[in-house]
Amino acid sequence: MLKFFLLPSTLQPSSKFSFSNTLSHQTPSSPTNQPFPTTMSSINFHSHTFAGHPLHSKFPISGDPFSPSEALEALNDRIVNSIHSSPSPNLKVLPFRNGRPLASSTAGSGDSPPSWHLGWIELDDMRGVLGNSVSGLSVDWFVYLGSSAEDDAVYWAIDVSDKVPELGTNMNLCFVELRTLMVATDWSDSQAMGNLAIAGHAKALLEWHDVSRFCGHCGEKTIPMEAGRRKKCSNDSCKRRIYPRVDPVVIMLVIDRENDRALLGKRQMPATQLYTSLSGFTEPGESLEEAVRRETWEETGIEVGEVVYHSSQPWPVGPNSIPCQLMVGFFAYAKSLEINVDKKELADAQWFSREDVRRALTFAKYKKAQRTAAEKVEHMCKGMEKNRSLAADFNVESADEHAPIVVPGPFAIAHHLISSWAFSDQNVVNGVECNSKLPMGSMTNLQ
Ligand SMILES: [Zn+2]
Image 1 (cartoon, rainbow, N blue to C red):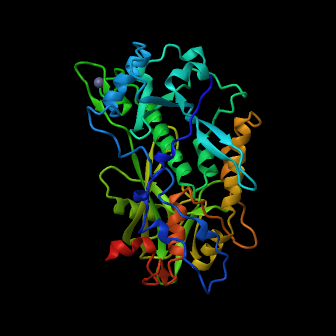
Image 2: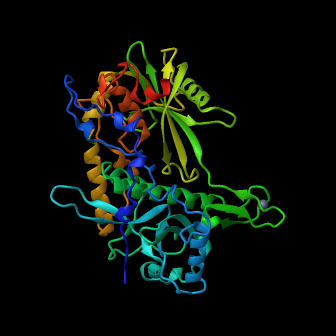
């Protein structure tokens, strides 16, 4: 019989994930003398998208039945030795197919959009859901995601790409692109945000397993260890340990303090007015601040002086070959103003006034894009729609007479860098007066 589970409410992200100095500052509390509607004030993040993983940072120590090593033994007993002496803990599995997690969707009540859920499957039900092709289950396929003693459960991910075909359409379950789920997530729903973070972590780990199947030193096969959280070379004379890969990317809002403008760039994509912060990978042997200055110089010819940290965001939805980027966000203060765009990197880059940026943030239809993506997931899970192109998910609305440009939605750190600056001249934030020219995220860092 088919069973799947919603993430228990006890696993919702707690308030400790809250970003008191950055994200919660971005929205003006109650703007009194500005001409824009207050759509931004409805955005209330506890953490960036893909951060705030509710199962993370709770890994029990060795010896605890919920620890990775003990949980792996329990998993081994169940699937290799078929020992069911103890029903505890529950072993719940999130299958992925070609990087897409299993998901379901429930219709919204009244006017609210549908909401998606992760398709957790009890270990014992794996065959019932995924068919006999998983009959030769191996513990090596499973990756430990975390546990909850409160819910008596250990959570795992498994890649079934080459093991099972697409699911039939009669299960109300389907494999959905993580980017689609990202756009479909109601960012004010902390449980949905927690689910997204779990799926992002799982995807990053599974893709890392996929791209590290062989030892880079001797070429022998690698084998998982520590319940899939590490790997090592199978060659006894090598035994190299391999750790999950994270690639740091700097992302910076370059600011012209003198003229109260911000520098935004447009990627080489046809028919888009999407302008966003500059970004780029860090080079080996380079500090983050150096990467900010180098990338800004290379892409736009602008020289940067002071660099101030804002916040960071895991980004597991980049290219498959890069399992997880870590976006590290900064404000970067320009020392020169003349733009010289590298056309190989960007289609355009311009200085935008605070007014223009506020208009872009205010009039973008982020909620509409979220509803469209949520309805798409609902249709897919009911077998009504195949995966569409990703571009459609990101179409938050073309620029119109209200705003000349579009800026990324709240799922991206770029949105928060841009909105932090755009609304930072409002003198009262959370009841505290602040320097009118400083972006909010920089306040604590400059003290
Ligand atoms: Zn080796």
